[in-house]
Image 1 (spheres, rainbow, N blue to C red):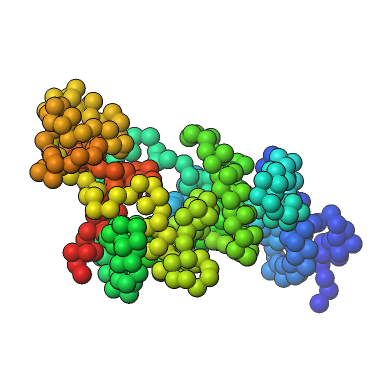
Image 2: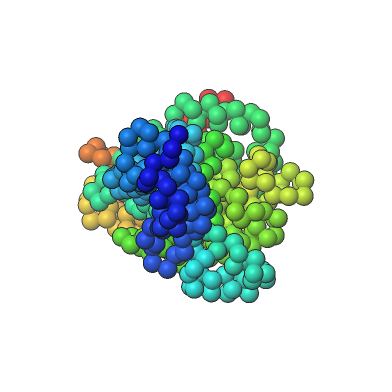
Length: 416
């Protein structure tokens, strides 16, 4: 078969038909060489086949260069967050994000390379190694989307939030996890005073006992949030720069490959979803095998969670919260709600403001916080949080999160 004239011309003018790189984000380097090497032979094959079928050369060139249809660009505002109940979809979404962004790396950014040098000096790392890792870090548009808060006007609803976590899948998995690790849970309680239901509740809320540990490359997620934190919410880029530095140190110390570690869109890792700094500070080798493994060792996970809570003020034998009837007077209620989740008032102060605690709460010597959990259009739910309630919020700064952990743990315990 004789090649069409346009293909003969293409063979003679090969360089002119190579796909040109897309416009890069400011300061980011595009790794287009691999696509260029692959696009040319693909163009030749497609052009020959499509010419026979009557397809014009421009259509063939568009297919070869991977041009997407309008509205399908990576990072579209219509992209929705994967549901927690579909781990395969979550992994696929993360893989798509990485694939779409793999050509956008941080190697060309002077500020990133300067950060690599400074981090290496602070942490005693090899500067060339640190630079090499960050040169291959990729900007992930989806990470920048997922870190954003809910749309303005989204009503909080504790009842709906609770039902997301206290549900059959987590209850069954939680009972199985508790049964398989009862000895480690008991040992953790003996050592740090944290009851099994709290540890089990946290792991269940975080990852459903390892079913959902995140599919994003931690290096990419942390680099995206460290160097391109999105506008529209309080800037936390300094926090993520520190976590990125801690991640590099963690990988060096534990012999991990920074290019391979996977986690959440915020860079949290393992069953307990610890950030790199928390792994370095609070994770423990609870099973004594000589290494800390927050993915494969339930013992290490249990010990690390209990150790973390103890480090943030968990008190042995103290309840997490007490039932309370809020003051009728709006002004008194506002005074008690002002400190939010921080324990501030004595039981007597509660009473003086018209709040009625249960019997155990009235006998409590420590400080309490009046915690309000909104229920959409329905009346709010109120509890009096103790220092242990506050300790759980150090894991995630949210009263809703703390109550979900407590509720899930209690439900699993009741079903054992």
